[in-house]
Image 1 (spheres, one colour):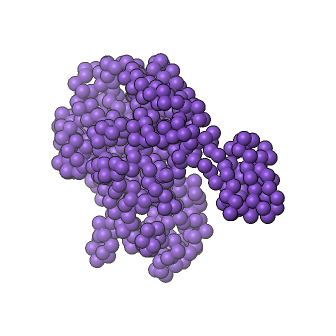
Image 2 (cartoon, one colour):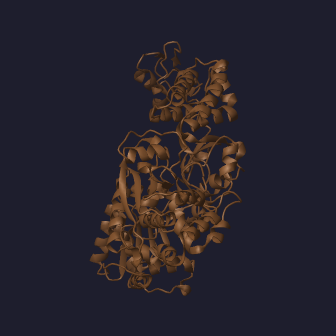
Image 3 (cartoon, one colour):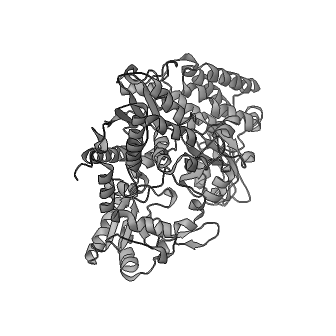
Length: 636
């Protein structure tokens, strides 16, 4: 690959390589109508296999190797292209294989399925029905992903290229208008015009607080300095969150290009991606993308023949959750301890190495180039009045369809749970959803019609956060959930300020006391009082939001807390110290399995006679419950 020195050369390069993805794009745009296909690809068929971390952990790498081997054995290597892509999003059904031009979507594919896919689908044109998705509600077999409830309501902007392009080939990215936005701003827009477009679009930070992106850029541009920095925050630390990771694994160049656009807008010549070392695949694909972009002259000096210089490097973090806070992040980049500092001064005025610095997270950057190419008005029409565009969520927990979803801002919570997520597993009752990770709150089922937007979530004691969405059912104890998140924040607190260092530990101790059956009504008052003090007095966002899981569950599930402290019971039967086990005489067959496995010999009874548990001796280990073959043990 030789260096690209102008917009004309970039266009010529795109025309040269566009056949790489033309068949895929044409098939998507044709919407299943083969008569509309206009294909320039030299290959007649493209087989796309998910190469995200989740599917690779389920042997998708071997699946790719087997597919290529079978295609070679069938003498079709010149006609069929196997592509390793990023995440398709439908993680519950991975590994996923998608075949163009007919848009067939195979799920839960194993390496030994490769031979049948090639012999049946590729060679003979016959669909392998057993690998198609079966809707768990409608019991229908579905061939194309666009007809699946998981995808029907999604609008993909940040994830647009994930599952379409090969993230390790810059040619694929350029084929889908990659680096066109950078060329546009360098040759037809002033920095102020770029910032104005981002401001008009209404794009807000996707990493937590939702600060207006354009305003952040404007503040950094106005700061005077001989050196400025752009930082991409890829330190995604929320339990259950994998949005940024999937973008970096599936479309790394979209972040690099957006960082360069931001650098041009604020006057920076250096970018840093702060990414946790626990994301090895994302790190490797970023390294490949940076090297290829530099080789083509799309990063480095005199980009696209202009006078603009911009370099990007990686900075690996050690996985400290507090380093998601921007000042702690910068301290870590500088080689210091990951601790926040007081603001002001804000990073836009005094950031990395005391120079003006702009920090956005991965998903925020993933929207930038689409806005530049399509215009602020296009983006502005998606979402709500104050929350524009789309949001990516990692949908997990007690939900039928686990995965990565991108939906318009303002969509109702229930639409995500029941339409995209296909409802609660095992026919259980929906109880709550936890959004925003350790910084967020628990939203009860009664608020299922709540529109998902920044202000609406904040008004009920939760937050958008980076996009974790954990669904809870009737078997989940809300006191235990609050305790789980407090355990996380206690461990992750940097310890710099007493309200967070000491206060979160005291909160956790009270919750532990309650779940062990030793709580009082006074403890509930103390939880609320202490949580409010921690929110108001902590130094950074970690401490200021740490009480949210406690305060939101207290607000919406107060009766559950009362059951723990007054009745000394856990309604969800989760809290071990509050459980009691009883034998149901009519069900017990006297097999003695429970008695033989009880570690403290507290179960008595004769063979073929109902057994009895001595509750005073019982240590509540649950072995009897798990061993009983006829479910004759009852949790009470």
